[in-house]
Image (spheres, rainbow, N blue to C red):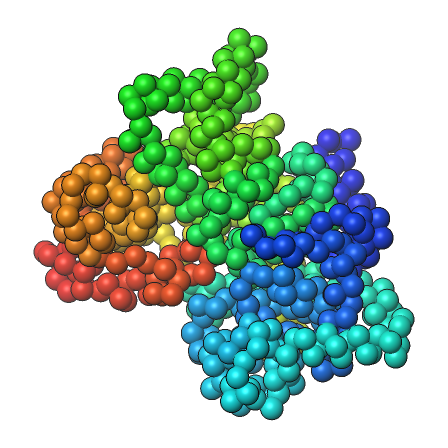
Length: 616
């Protein structure tokens, strides 16, 4: 039997009858006193037994205020323990929790609430309630609004109930009917929905992706089988729980592995959290890794020449071994000894400044990451391995592992998953990680697969002779120039972002004679770079027109162009004076580019890059 089939069979058998409530029951029984959930810098650790007790009380309270099995609950809250608790409490009812990004507009919030038919809305406090107030009359299915933090009486509505009261109601209900909690969760089946996640909506209305208990547990099982991380391992949760990666790595995987999650409520404190926890595994979106690499480069730029020379030598040794492993070759004993020496004397202290000194598996996904960044981090002794997937595939569909990886690819299919290419290069996937479907407005579920079970992902890629998948672009985002050349903007943008000064870049050129770019400076690195060079105005608006900085950006563009075919090369660019954020609208909450918004918002700037083409 093929080894991959054997692994897939083992994963399928392990995940077959499990549900999230069943796993939480196991943890509260077998690992009752182990830590489950902590907030960074707070003495609020909950053991598995304590966490489940709170979940049971809140679950009963939510049932009493109108949340029904199969009903939907929207959560708009920052990363804090209450978010985990109410989410799991709804899950134990057989209800479907869904986290809402706080950066969504009022119209988008209304759409999600109406589309989901939400029965209960859980909000953090008065600020969030104020954002929803104008929407509330439009929501016919909404029964109650649960408020986590206290608010002034004038801020409340007739439907508002404090979370503390929900818990008290649940305690009373449990006393009246002690077996109700157990009866409810034991009735839940693996094929039932466990959560509803709305896609970013880069090209239209968000789609509600329905994931089952089997989907999320199979993902946890296959991760355990693929990446050797200790049981009960510590981890850091810093992404929003509306993000599929944090859903898996911050909720479901720790429940399956009985791990210890430390919540980092403020993403700007991520490095400090990693230093404090020293987790053996960590997933970062590309921007996180790019900022880490830029930070180390800035640190080295001001170091003594002897320190820089020592790092250069150590990095070269680590890279030599990395390249051999990436090629599937053994690392000779002599080289392994030199790597160990370089780690101990030079690289480990630098890794510790980032909290990566215990790293067994470091992953990157959600968007392309420049290969130069991967190589720099490998030279630091940290192998960042790309994965690929989407909300519809419950996170990772393909993965690079420490034992088998290839730089510039997103790895091979997870056990049990199949990947093939359509005639036009679109990636198709099939297997147990494919979601149940999209939620329709009437509450039914629309299948996402064809008659043979294949999901068309919208991504375009290639598969090499060893089965490693490479992503070349999004199918709908290909640039087709006026001369008919098909160009991948993501490839160009990744090369540009490899420079530490460049935070974001958008390649322009669809139906245009050549490629240009809009460039946004990194709002942390650029001011440091400017001050180190004596530039008086070190803020982004001033730097956008500074001759010295523009010369550096031109050098970065030239370096990218050297790696591109002539039709792909960036002919000219504009450095914009402001940063892009989800709040400003150019990025989705998962930091993907909203290309349509960018093209509309910077219409005049784009036209100025094509002076001979007129105002197209």
